[in-house]
Image (cartoon, rainbow, N blue to C red):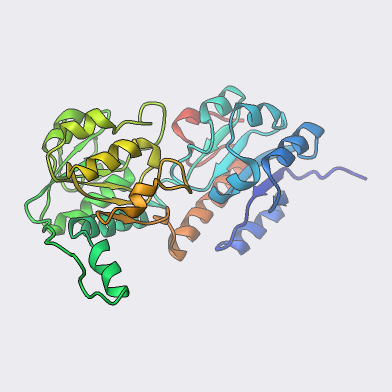
Length: 337
């Protein structure tokens, strides 16, 4: 049998909203797909040569169930021909991008595509937390009308601290502005382009943001520098009655510290879409009537999922036609096959 002359691309998971565009890639690539299995099987298949010849992998967020994290163990077993991984999602902590770079594998994510949807989710959680909306919403469904609801807070005049003024943080600031917030933010460095700070939020140090903000919304990537960034010490710095919103990654917050801060009324309320040990959620967060909870659905809209899938496909197409990714992550920046 004659080997295919087309480069080989493996899809991990399923494309659900851009099927035609994915199938169109068959004109220029041999498309393979893995829809079921487990990490042990995937590692065994890599080791035995089942996936030899791959140029690129396109992976969905949920495909972590099929392979586990792309860590050093897995990366060491990937075929030597593999040069590109196109990941669905802005956050890419499911992949050790540094280890990939060391192996000559470039990784892309889907920045921009997720900004609006995630920012909208953060606004929902923010307003819900300010009103402790879980209390009356639950009481109503249980036939107790408002239940034990107390008074919440208005956003007008509150100082909103944005941790991470990237694409999502910027989109969030635009949506928060009409509610009357005064805004400040912290990044590793102040943003340079006005378009990245559309509300002209004031740049402050990390400590100042913690000490002075009435509301803190987290929009940081998860990495070695941000894991556990908000813990006991940081909650102690915050104003009494602060509101916390997290739509970034759960491991940025120490949940034990958050639970205690809620119990002591240091934190008035929290709105969470992400958790430290997903899909497990700290039982005290489940019990708390001060927390608005969502199960990591910040990008769970038809429109956003299609945008993300299209960008994954566009990255693969550009690899096939131009030999490089359109949106490489920082660890892979400027790297070519």
